[in-house]
Structures are given as C-alpha cells and as structure tokens.
Image (tube, rainbow over all chains, first blue to last red; front, side):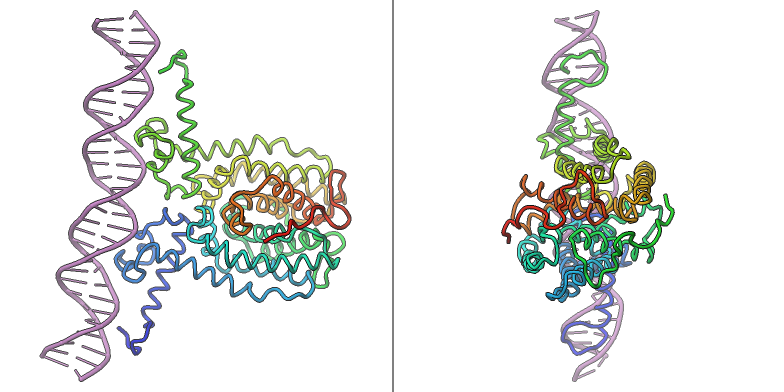
Length: 228
Length: 228
DNA sequence: ACCCATATTGACCGATCGGTCAGCATAATC
DNA sequence: GATTATGCTGACCGATCGGTCAATATGGGT
C-alpha cells in the first residue's frame, strides 16, 4: 500500500497489527483463549472481523503471537539480572524488576496467567524447557550463596516461586486488590511501598544482611497509611 | 423420585447435583465463565446437556453456585483463625491453613482465580464488602502487634497479600510449577517443605521470633532435594 | 490509461453456543 | 389400575462461533 520496497512490513500494516494485538491482549487476558471471540477483538480494535483474520491468519496464530511477544518481553528484562555478586542487590533487583514488569504489561501478564490456569496447553514446552533451565541456573547460584553463608539454606526454587507469586499478585489479581483497597488502580506510592515491603521481608527472611538493602534492624518505613 | 417426603432434596438428586458441580468446577476453572460450555460440563458429568439445565437452571446460576460454595469453604476454615495471641502461631497457622485449603480444593481455587482475572464481575460485591472487612479486622490486629513490638512495622495489608499470593501460587499455577519441577503434582514432602520455607521466611522477615516457629537462627531444614 | 499486487469487507459456511419445550419414562398416591 | 407429580432428554430455537471467499477498493509501476 504505502510504499516501502516490498520486503516485509509497511508502516500502516505495522500500525494496524499493533492495534489488533492491543485489543486482542485485552480480550484474551480477560476471558482466556476459549472465552475470547474474534468479534470482541474486532470491535475493540474498531475493525471488521474479517480484517483480523486477514492480518493474523487465525485465532490460534494471534494467540500464540501474543504469548511469544510476552515471553520475549519477559526474557529481555530478566536475562541479564543475575551476576554472582551479592544476594541483596540481586534479589532486590529481581523483586523490583518483576514488579515494574507487571505494571508495564498488565494485560500480557494476565494473558500468561490465564494460559497457565487453563493448563498451559500452548506453553508446556516453554515451561519444561527454557523456563526450567532459567530456574535451574538461578537456583544453583542461590545454593552457592547459601553454602558460602551469605544467606539461609532455603530451597532456592521455593524462593523463586515466592518472588514470582508475590510480585505477580498485584497485576493479576488487580481486581481483588483494588476491590479490597477500595481503589481502581494502585498508586505510585503503593508500588513503592509494596516493593520496599517485599524487599524487607524476603531479604530479612532469607537471612540476607546485604549492602543494597534498606531493611533497618526493626521497623521498615512508612506508616500504615491509615486505611480500611 | 426415590421417596423422601416432599420437602427438599432426594438423595439421588443430591448425588447428581454433586456430580454436576464437580464437572462444572473442573471446566469453569480451566476455561473461565465465557470459555466454558454446558456441553463440556455435560460430557464430563456423563449426562445430557438438557439435564444440566434441568438441575441448575442456567449457566450463570451454576457458576454463581460454584462461586458461593467456594466462598463458604474459604470462610469456614479461616473465620476462627485469629485470636490475639502471639503472631508466630497465628501467622503460621494462617500459612498452613491456606496451603492445605488450596490443596483440598484446587479446582475451586482456580475458579476463583479465573473469576478475578476476568475482572471479578460476579464477585465485586464480595471483595468490596465481606472480604474487605475481613482484611481490615486482621490488619488492625497486626498493627497492634507491631505497636507492641512483637514484630516489624510492616504494612499489614501487604503482608496478607503476600501470604495469599505465596500459598495460592502452588495451586493456581500448578501447571507452571509442575512444568518447571518436572512433576505432574506436588508430593506431600513438597508441600511440607514449602510450608516450612514460607513460615521461615515470612516470620523471620517480619521480625517475629515466635514460640511456634521452627526458624533456626540460620539454616532452615532439609537439603535442597538435588534438583533439576 | 492499463495492470496487478495488495487491502478490505459483506456475505456466507457448518459447528457450536445457551436455552426451551414437548413428550415419554418413572414412580408415588389414591 | 388410573391419576398425578416429577425425572428426564431428543429435538429444536435464534445467536454466535472461527473461518472462507468472492467482490470491490486502492494505489504505485509502467
């Protein structure tokens, strides 16, 4: 259509595809693969349904494309996170990175969650392959830290799962958290408060008295924000 | 059909309804409200589709019935959990109770999770009402503990969310956890190991040096079970 | 002007959706 | 044994599902 040799992507095509992906991520994350319909996606994207199929091929192709995009965003940020420096900075970075990741891509995170709730039919290979290796390598490092007396001898896998679950909770259960707190969305101060809390509890709980930690011997930080 | 005056429930009716609820919980938990179909539920229950509607009225009625059942199971176990005795036993009980609850009703827990992922259209009242009050009352107690110096002055709401997320993770993300660990399901030893880990990290992380805690000054317990 | 690759979409397909209903089966009541 | 209330379900309803396709629109290259 709009020029560009003939290689791959015209700018308008990219724009349209982006809007479809945005709409699809929203619908899939709310209703899961089976519960989502192309018509809902089309309506949200402001396009006729046939147009969605024209650009994406099929419902399944659109879905796995979203899944892969989210996987790569995940990898990008977390790949370089683990030197074998001190546990405090590494775990602290891990917590905060995971926290902002969930805030940056809330829909994508929910998409992942729905896929796993459904039994991970499209992700089982990824989980048992790439992700498993990622966990193994990090677990090995944590075990070394424990052996060196830098932290308690906790099971590294449970520690990783703990950080995952605690950080993901606020994006994937935003409806629950919001309902209980009485807010539609978490504020910037909430996020900072939560991150600090998690750092405090997890690092201290693992017996890490690190350099980059702001965990005082007692009493963490802010007040309790009054509250419900 | 099978006798019993005419008051309410015949035993055969109860049996059939139970089998429908079982099948429906399975399907709804995997695919969410929209993604589930009455035909799938009927097939899994071994009944014709019309029979499901005969007993349950409608898809929505069946769904909210499952939601309510899970809510009540939840309340039953957790209602009596909070005296104002010492933080260590209370939090420890809370962690372990929540852990076994997820193991006892994995399908129901996933049903809840799917509902909240979808934006909690059927649960918003419950979240902003009953559950919110529950959190408030527990938060008040935790704040007292902090004020009495029994534990660090962490935000009680974040602490509650942390315990929720950490315990729920293993049931709702069983596909992910299983894929990474290379098991189909968690063993009894896994569960004990995880519970001990969470007790250790959370109690110690909150500065609780309780009576009922098995958190040694360093090194928690078991080895690392080799690992993947 | 003509061509042609690409973009776009209304109309349509068989399958499945949640739900209704008429009709038959079953079994307690008289 | 006739009556009646209830259990049960095949057949069907309009709506919507994912997907196909023919027809049309568009716009640059020649």
